[in-house]
Image (tube, rainbow, N blue to C red; front, side, top):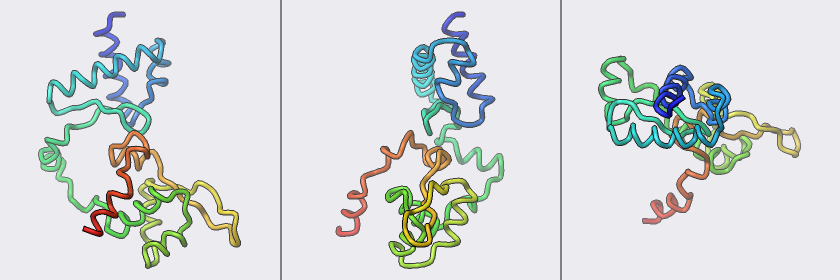
Length: 176
């Protein structure tokens, strides 16, 4: 199979996946080496970027996914009549930030950092699958420990937690 055909197959698989697909799973489906799939994916990423069209190929949440170009989001919103209520609330964002930077962390620790009860925010983030229970703390009562999920990475367009901005960036803003 020629490279252009392999790229077409990759596009097809990514289109039907609907969520990030790993290079390993794509290679297995195509019965080719993962290194070859990675090379072709990088070429496709460049081709989509250079074309500057309505679709992009991105590496996100330990996989690859076709997404709509954010430059044209207003048209998608208009077409789908998407409301802005899908945004995270301020308490949910605060809670998610604490969990992302301090994980694994208990709800009590989140509450102490925020200075308020975080029950509703934690429940909302669990429902949206941005956080999950990753274990229990070895302390009295054995409270749940929370951490972020692949959905969190996907929603924020991150490959890994290493792409989070350093917390020191936020501390500088507070003192300025």
